[in-house]
Amino acid sequence: MPSAFIWRRLHSLAGLWLVVYLILHLLTNSQAGLFIGDDGQGFIHGVNSIHELPYLPLIEILVLAVPILIHLIWGVKYALRANYNSIGGNGHTPYLPEFPRNRAYTWQRITSWLLVLGIIAHVIHMRVIEYPLSSQIGSEHVYAVRVHTDEGLYTLAERIGAKIYDKEQISTLKQKNDQADHSSSPSSSHIEKQNQVQHQQWIAMLEKRPLGANEVIVEANNFGTVELLMVRDTFKMPIMLVLYTLLVLFACFHAFNGLWTLMITWGITLTQRSQRLMRYLCNTLMVIVAGMGLSAIWLTYWINLKQ
Image 1 (cartoon, rainbow, N blue to C red):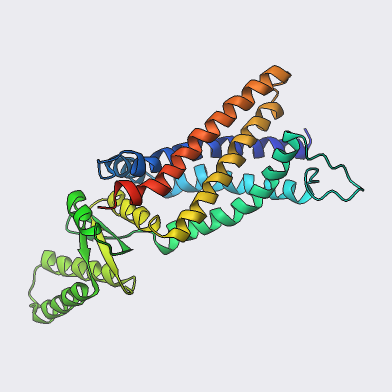
Image 2: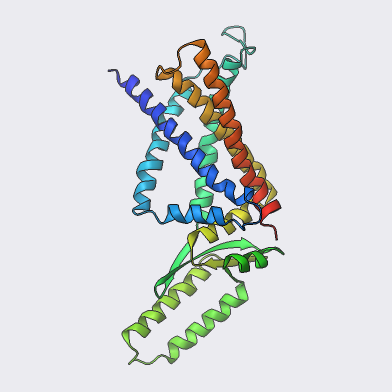
């Protein structure tokens, strides 16, 4: 078989898996906004279930990063060769903007470029800049993120079992830790020395991200709780509301329009009737999944977790 044929099939299969992942990802996120009154417990449980998977870094690489790279690299190749026939008519190339599928073809290529930028920014934001820090105290792992203060943060943190540290509290903890180190005895037991090391690492975790005005560190004994507070903090910023709304809309259109074409590529929907029915199904799924994503963006802070 020609290599182009094989890569095109790999590209479409990777895209199919990314559609499934998008549904699962936005389904989990929607629980932070749609489950009014449960303080995001559905989101916390879902995130903790994922975070507790064995070999999670390997799973993220093989099951997520590799399909994204395959779909992205081959998709960029398609986008570079694309001949748009619903915009930019110049009289020398076909220009047929009145046909919906031509417009869909054009937007599939436009959203591919926008998603490359959006996904890279999303990964940098959530997985690098604001990704929860972790430390170990005794037999317990603790996690921490930096968020902006607001009136509802303290009451919410108390309800979901999170602790809040401001700059002064962290400074006081560091001073007490330094004094304890100086007063420790050389004859301290191995366990006492280990506890001191862990306490130092815990203080270092709290200090790792410098705090600006109206910023604090929130800490919890599970990953999902601090992830919820990070998402809540992100979606109370107007600029993030706009950017993530666009990202969700672009991703859902690209995913489900791509799903419609995938069914033709693999010879599943060949008749006009089957393609029409599949289009209705894909459009319905597009609306539902986009609604889940938008609910997480617009309802998490402003409706469900503001107080």
